[in-house]
Image (cartoon, rainbow, N blue to C red; front, side, top):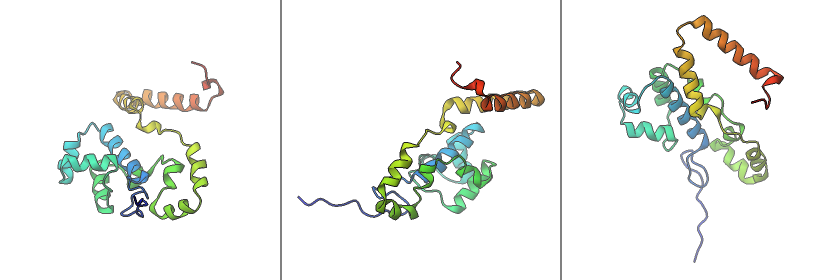
Length: 163
């Protein structure tokens, strides 16, 4: 039996043919922003002139979002294009299509980066609920004080391991 090696990446997919992690990240950010706005996939699809299945594919990273489509998405979701790339993990950022040939020649570098991987807290339901609750606070001055408190606590040595 002849074993066939995975074909080279095409259209931005990984060498194994899987969705590119950067496309998955962008899709996750689209879902995050849509969810924070309380918008359904159907509504986003309607505003973009797409089917909700296409929006699902974008959000899962199964289909790549082209530049003009990302422009439309950014306008509909009222977010700058840079929002969709924010908080990208270093491991993910190193998996752009141009990096695949470099990874093939130095796989140990990728393995070291994978050891540093930490799941994205922006994808957690807790984060989405926290942000929604924050923006529902009618007293914006009190909300700002809460924000300042959270920032201060996150920088404090008291916040470590005391639960």
